[in-house]
Length: 283
Image (tube, rainbow, N blue to C red; front, top):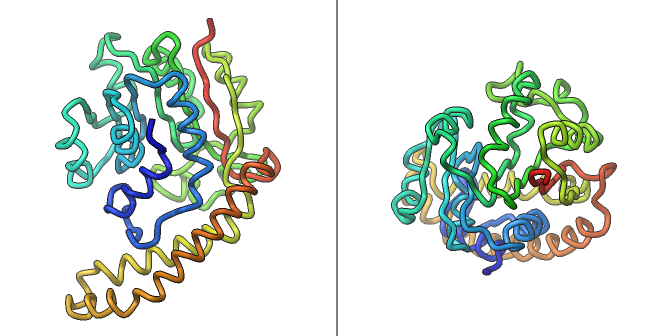
């Protein structure tokens, strides 16, 4: 199986899944996150996947580009133009608008998947809806299949109501942040068992990498593509900025190597922002 990390960088630089960011300044420090997804995908190699809360299709595109799996995605609201390159390039892929329960009803219990992606979705579900959501999720996982779940770590991130994206402050925001023990208990009650888990986005990465890369990459994207800037000025900027962009790429690549070592050695429930779990049905 091809490396998800290297495929991710290639797709980023081609403009897939990097909405709002510059193709010239990739997120090199996502390597540890993608290593965990690769471990879930590769053992055993998946034949089908369902991407719940798929957003702009970044993860769906990544799996379709690196595996032979058939895929489906469920998203409440999506931009048809953003998904068009994926749906046109992969006829074995299905995109559905709505919630998980809508998709379950449309399948009538006839579809199951080797892998279900729940990347940064769980925190958006009202706690009162969680039992029914997990019941629907259980029906979609094939025997021997897995769920790859990531969600904010409450120990580091604090309660959802203290977040700037608390659902009462921002539409489609966070309803609840969980500790690992809380989440494992919920999953167990729904018939799942945690196969393995880890933590990602160490404070080192958040403070020294995300804080600088993301604003710079967004700024470069605006200067490259904003229609508010005359096309000749954008062309001049593109060429004059090449030396600075080259230096920035080199710096962020080097910094990402340090981030990767820190993530592997020091990320835990007390130091990292994100929980990552691989779960499966209880036998």
